[in-house]
Length: 218
Image (tube, rainbow, N blue to C red; front, side):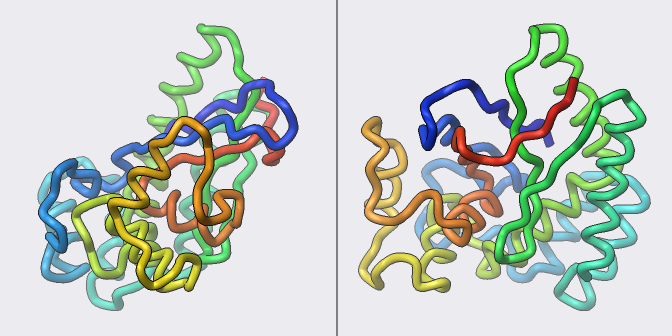
């Protein structure tokens, strides 16, 4: 749940572009092309629940998703609202959320604090996330960003980009990996497009820009 900090930079400068295992098992490196996380969303949720340690409020939402194949907007927004309140109760000034076209939410970045502040924020956001929204976020991300349940993170992103007609039909996973890992920041698609970023964020990639809205934590 810990959100990347936004550092000072030139207007429009990309300040964060990294991959994280936002979905447990979704970021398997070297996965065979086409390999799936599970045969169905219901089966994947069952796998998560079998690992235990899911807060009861989130388990209730996931149990509904197993039968309906979706997470309602009200349940999703309630989970994020509870996370925000948990963080406010811990003394943070504000928690801002970025809403993507898919309906996905992600916490906005923040100005880099002191080492002590960042350590505390990391601990607190993990605690509040685990209690209120982390598992719901993972499943919601799968539903909107990886409905085909691809185990390979990059393949899931490219599939999402194709479904939303954000890249040409012949755009490949290998091309995405090459472009995204490049040091010049050049890609054949608009990385700042919110639909593109929704595909990335829902599949565990964190992308931030200095022009993004930021939260004032302290």
